[in-house]
Amino acid sequence: MTTTTVSVPMSETSQPGEARRAAMRLASGAGLDEEVVGKVAIAVTEAASNVVKHGRGGDVILRTLRDGEAHGLEMLALDRGSGMANVGECFRDGYSTAGTAGTGLGAIRRLSSEFDVHTIPGVGTAVLARFWSAAPPKPELEVGAVCVPKPGELVCGDAWAVACRAGVTIIVVVDGLGHGLPAADAAAAALDAFAASRTPEPRIVLEEIHAALRSTRGAAVAVAVVDPRRRLLRYAGLGNIAGAILGTGPARHMVSHNGTAGHEARRLDEFSYQWPEGSLVVIHSDGLGTHWDLGRYPGLAQREPSLIAGVLYRDFARRRDDVAVVVAR
Image (cartoon, rainbow, N blue to C red; front, side, top):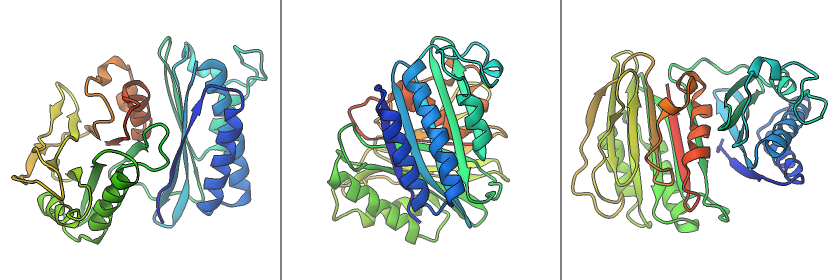
């Protein structure tokens, strides 16, 4: 089942309706039953309305999910508003700062299968809700992402995928050169090569993708292999994709070589890094600025990986290119 992402900008009162319709369409297409689709419609409407009312603009990002036999929908509601000084109070039914019924945040939490929120007064609020057909298995590595096209484009030239092989988790992030359909075709070819691969070795995966992209525009590609049992992360990258491991102490930035998968690759080396318990890895395309610092966001590093990716996208996306942000814990 192919994952589908839809991003709806939020700045006008008509746009929550657009987000609701997109969410219902995705949820139905993902195979969610009528009851869950109804919950999605209510929750997305509430979240999108909050972004417009309180958020001084923002985004609602919807993504279909598949984990084994379970399938679902993920919603990120991202705003740049005044934030919440007391999150617990905002869950209480009847509480409102906008003269409304005040059931939004509490309703979203009750309706969803999974819920998380991060807010900083004066910076903004990010809300995550997931709706599942059935409880998914607990993954050894939690992975979340935001991957959306350049504003105005219908297709995204960035892409990502994750797979489990031989007891490790492999994450691939791709940035097709440029944007639009040729970039999207290159990214799709890279993910096809990854899906056909059977190796857990990052350098070999990168070589296979490099060979598969020769007839395309080409792409920047990063392959990270996380082995939680050995506390090890192995990484092979080509082109302008950034990767960092965040734990205690300074961030460790991973090495990608210059080049373009499918065209020029003078070196395809693999590097190994320690993976301390509780660490995060953040991998992103150059559609995200590089000057982000999770230390500026108290408590964010402990939130859901998708929520972390959403906040980074909200505050550091360049908005003139496709962007992919993948976070794993």
